[in-house]
Image (cartoon, rainbow, N blue to C red; front, side, top):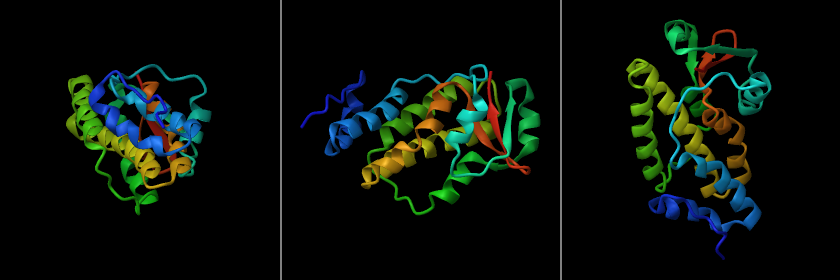
Length: 183
């Protein structure tokens, strides 16, 4: 059965086609969550309305006290406050996830786009942390769906929505605040 999963970039169709084994509604949710990243141009944007509520939904797997936002001009303060990176926190929660084979095209494309979009603005160590956090967020969402746990994959949607909104979760400080990079 064809659920109509098509992207504007045909080389990625085979990746998204993996979701066709699920009922149409579920396949559409999974595709709708991942598809925006095919062709996405990473760009920091102003703080989204209701960031507090959205960030709490996005990090249900990590107890947060609050949210602290940092602009590019405050990157040094952000890095000084950082206790654990978002990627490391994700790894600790999803430590048993298996790596899949259908991930490489999206990973390579987003790596290049993040590099092009942000490398002139931030130092490489922060860029690597952001890349790691985004890749793991996408990987777990995609990977959980591929290993037969699609609902758990969909649970990553609020987190991925923060990325698409241009509010990039970097990590957590020692007080349990989520640190978010914004324009």
